Image (cartoon, rainbow, N blue to C red; front, side, top):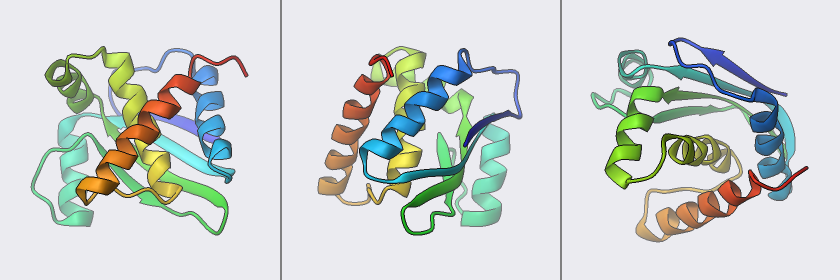
Length: 139
């Protein structure tokens, strides 16, 4: 099950379409959908989590806590709406496209994709692009 939670004024439009899409991403990678919780927040909220749990004193767009067991994908994905808006401007893409990239990025980590090396980051970016295209495919 995919759920969306809000710790900010932002509200995701068409939760069902996003839920179906996230499930499609997970299944397309050969995994099963467990409990995926997206928590939309602001920079301060996510910065506090970054400090408390990761000891990183930086702003970030996403932090994910992976509870996957075997093939059952589960986790909590915190998304700073402020960072996504800023990154969309920086990358010259729409907010909606950047949001999809971040939402996909979180579950792709749970599917085993990394982004620490240059090669891994390139593969992750290609997978994000591939999964964004699935959003427009009717289920």
